[in-house]
Length: 339
Image (tube, rainbow, N blue to C red; front, side, top):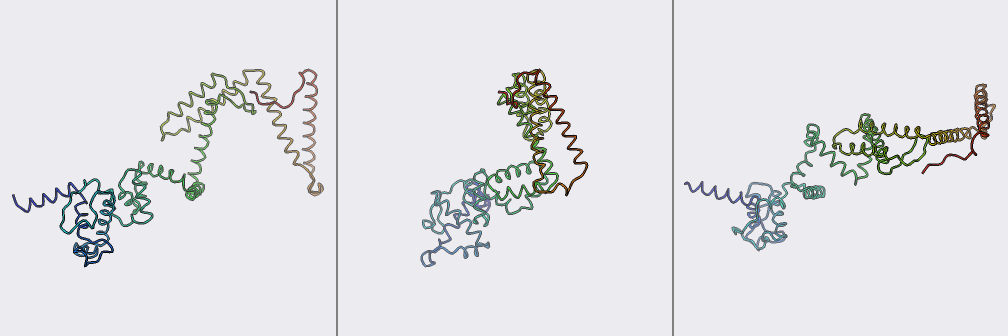
C-alpha cells in the first residue's frame, strides 16, 4: 500500500472522528492569544496564520473563538497550555458544532439572539443564521411549500404574542387586505358560535331570544356537549366553519323549542320581549327634543303625521292593556331573568 494513501486515510480518520476540532487544534496551538507579544511565544498572529493558510483572518478567528469557548467549558486545553505541533485528545466531532459558528453575523446582537433561539429549538445555530441571512430564500420556501408556510405561521404567532409593534403591523396588514379581512371575520363568527355552544355545555345555562337566562334541560345540554365534542375532535387544519354553523343553528332552534314547549315560559318570553321593545322605543323617543332648536326651522307636515300615527298606536296599546288588566292576575314589573 502506498504511504501517501495510508497518510490520507489516517488524516481522513482524524477528521471523521474529531471534525472541526482537528482544525481548531491547528489554530489553537499556532495562533498566539491576544495581548501576548511575538517575543514571548513562537506562535503567530491570526493575520499571519491566515496569510500562510491562504484564507481570511475572520475564518481563523472563528476557529480560535470556538476553541476558546470549549476551553472555558473544560473540554480542551487553554491556548497558553499548547505549543506548536503539540497533540492532545480531542472531543467528538458532534460537539464541535456546539461551539463553532461559521458566520461572522453570529457575533452581532442579532446573531446572538438567533443562535440562542436555535439552541432553544434544538437545532444548530448555523442553520438558523443561514436562513436569517437569506430572506429571499425563506420567502421562496414559504411561497412554494405549505409545510414551510405553516412553520412560518406558527413562529410568527409565537413572536407576535411578545411583540406589540408586530401585532399592530399585522393588524394593519389584515384590515388593508380584503381577503384577509373577510377570512378574519369568518373565523371570528365561527369562534363566537363555538363559544355559544361551549357556554351551554359547560355552564348548563341558556339565553332565550328575548334575553331570559334559564337552566338548560338535560337533553339540550347533552346535545351541546355532543356538538362540542365533534368540534374539539377536528384537526388543527380542518375548517370548523360548517361544523360551527350547524352546532349553533341546532342549539338556537332547541332553545326556541324549549321556550315554546312551556306555556309559562312562552308568556314570560313574550312579556320580556315586549318590555325590551318598549324600553328601546322610550330611549329613542327621549332623544326627540326641541331643547336646542326652533321647531319652526324644520317643521314638515309628514313629521306631524308620523307622530300622530305613533300616538294612535300607543293609545291602542294602552287601551288593550287596560282592558286586559281586569282579566289578568296582578300585573308585575318587567320580567326578570329566570334562575
